[in-house]
Structures are given as structure tokens and as C-alpha cells.
Image (cartoon, rainbow, N blue to C red; front, side, top):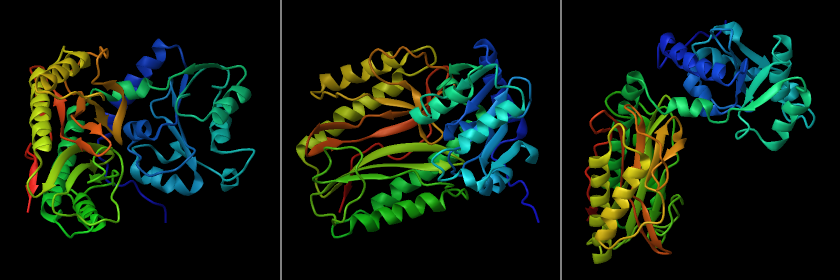
Length: 388
């Protein structure tokens, strides 16, 4: 028995629309094929969310469907999860795994030779490939014109379709459920690991009948570790007076909607309360500033000015583009980023601020840009959670 195609997150027409946008950019760059090796871009273009490496999605300027080249044992996942016809999911043999001389990228290169694309313009994601793998493409394709297309697909991903926004709203509801579960389970005497297990369980069970389809790594930074941003839970128990900075995200079909909230077990310190008020003001000023036509720089400057008037300075950026697999490495809310905001761009507006070794604070929202402002996707209360 052969595996059949599973439920699709999006219709075939949506994937063909995305591919058409990629081919338009390929034509502008005068390349006949694009080898996509970034997992998030492959999810965007096919629906594939299983994990395998190395892998390559070969897009030809001349063919409607791309060809997905993966490890042979991952072919059933490719058939089941993607919109591609079975003949366009090709497995490379197990002999290429753990082989010091050849790997799956050799299978991708062999395919380019087989279909007559080895001596034309070939786009590669050189920022994704290792130096060794990039060298392999150069050595084996001496007659090709290789063009660096590292962020070609990623920039196209920044403007979401309404179908994508709908899926992100489903993920946002899961995110909010995780925050509210955190408020229930974070208590003095509870192990951090046990609290995180409850939060992650909620992110898997989901919300509104929609389960989480993957786990984005949660970050829980508790006293005395609130001065850093990306540690996970520890073996400690929460104590009276503990502060907890939480960053989590719900996931639906690869689309990831993060949020940050800060918790205090017992009365928060005056310092924490003061920083919360300043950062909250900065967040709300940002949301009031965002609209199509503004720039990331405009929003960043608004935030910095607002919080500095309240006696708080922030060295780090104030957020970034989000979508598949948490972060899109494109637009960033920092001074000097002149990316123009467009409707249906989606961002994580992150007002995390790490002040010294033992003190920091977080609050954030995920939203989409509209013509006249923003639509915030997450809905957890924007407060400093004081817990008993």
C-alpha cells in the first residue's frame, strides 16, 4: 500500500501563487533554476514540515511544479504533506547518508544534469549552505552561472496572503492559551520543569479545536536569570519573590506566533513595575505608529523615544518579521532599517529589555500590518502578571 496525500493546510492554487512570485524574481535575476535548501522556504512553497537534511527543492523557470529531492525514507512524508505530484518527490539512496564523500546535495546536482539545467543560471541559497556544500555546487557545476539567492524566497514570504493570516490567527489563539496556562501553574514551590511541561502541553493540545502542529522552543528565564533572554527552564523551583520572563509561541502548519509576558510571584519590585510601565508605553506607541507606508526605522525610533522619556534605555532591536519557524530573517525594528511596511506583513513587536546581569523584562505582541494600522493577533492581557 502506498501513502496518500494528507489534509493540506492550503489549496494547490495558493502554492502555485507563491511559486509564481518566486519565478518572477528568478526571471528578473536571469536564472533558470533555483535550489531551495532552507527548511522554512520549503514549507512555504510545498507544505512540507517534516525534518530531513540535506534536501533540495528545485524550481525550474519552465515547469509549474518544483521537484523535491529528499532522503528516500522521507519520500512518504513528502507525498503526504505536500501538494506535489508523487513523481515530483524524489528520494536519494541511503548510501549518501553518513558518507564522507557524497551526500544528498550530490543527488540534487545529478538532477540538474539530468534535466539539462547544469549549464545555465542556477540560484543557490549560499547563506544556508555550509562552505563545504557550497563548494561542492561550484566544483560540480563549472558551466553554470551560480547566483546567490539566499533571501529571495524569504522576502516574498514577508507579505502574507489572507489564507496565511487565518492560519496565524489559529496559532495566536494557541499562544494565548499557553500564556493563560502559565499564569495558572507558575507558583512558589513548583518546579520550573513541571510548569513548562504544562505550558508545552497546552501548546500541543491547542485552542478552538486546532492542535499545535509543532513545538517552538519555549524560553523561561526566572530569577536570578532574568538578565538574559534565551535560556530555557532550570532544575530550580519557583520561590516567593521570583520574577519569570516567558517567551512562547503556538504553531500551526509551520506558522509560528510568539509572545512574551513577565510574571512576578508576589509583589513586584518597584524597579520591575517602573520598567513594565515604560516598556508597555513603548509597545503601545509602536502599535499606534505602525501602518502601511511607515518604515521599521519609524517604529523603532518611536519606541526608543517613548521609553527614554520614562527613564529606560534599550540597546537591542524592538522586533522582527515572523511567519514560518518563528523568525523571518528580513525586516527588523531597529534604527536604520528602512524596510517599508506593507499590508499583511507580520511582526513580533518585542519590547524585551535586558538591563544588567540579573535583571530584565519582556513584553511583546504579534500582529499584521494593515493599510490604516495594525491587527494584533495575540490577545493576552498586557499586564505584569502578579501571582500568589
